[in-house]
Amino acid sequence: MKTYPLEEKERIEQVIRSCSLCYVGMADSEGNPYVLPMNFGYEEGVIWLHSAQEGHSISILEENPRVCITFCSDPKLVWQDEQVACSYRMLAASIICRGSVQFEENDEVKVKALNNIMRQYSDREFSYSSPAVRNVKIWKVEVDDLSAREFGVPNRNSLKYKDRQQF
Image (tube, rainbow, N blue to C red; front, side, top):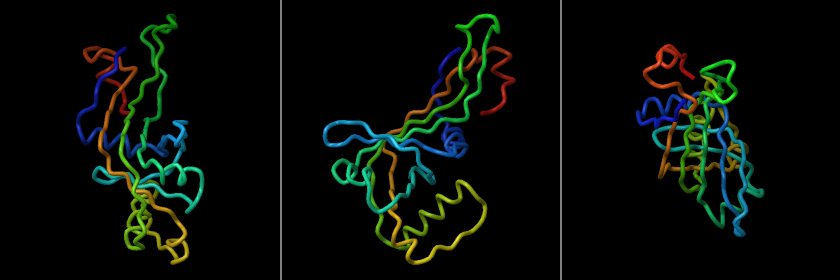
């Protein structure tokens, strides 16, 4: 089983949209890693996140806004030979994005970001009270660098690969 790069924009965006969470990694001033699972919205190379106005992550990002954000499709256990342990793999796709967090303070932009985040989880339209908008911290991450892979994939010429369901 192999790992293949994903290069098609549509396929990459399909993987991102299939995820319920992303994982946001950052490093504090002493180089200690800190990773948070977060809800997100994605649109045209921008990842939108939200949080409380204060906290450990905000303190870290005020000193170092660089982040690494990962997405992983729902993994599926696959094997080439059911009797051979070494042939078992997880079939999935992963996306690794890098960028810098910019905090949005404009209320109109915040509402657009919140709507983008909510579209990831619901087809409903939402409204937000002024205090809710004022009290949320909106993170905007323009993706500088992106790497995407499918892993645990049978050889592309095998029948299993051609017949597999999309993940």
